Length: 123
Image (cartoon, rainbow, N blue to C red):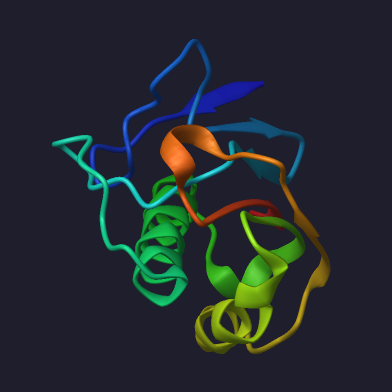
């Protein structure tokens, strides 16, 4: 296994890695709308937050030698399912190849973020 870290992604706020590689797969930790380098929250709406989440995921995938196009599975968490359509509008810009996905409502997310995404991708 290999740990992945990039300063272009959000710094972990607890004892976990941004991502791990095993075999030819990368598993990212859940990413929220946190600005790399500062740890500050980005945006208020699910659209603003989903944009930053996807940027953080993209940076981690790139650091591992992968890309959005190689994502095979995404797990998405929404604070409110009423945000589903708005979230999907952003998600589809980054994942137009439609990897397998689950999207569920979470009772609460870290610091009341509106969304969180984790992915599994090929290298």
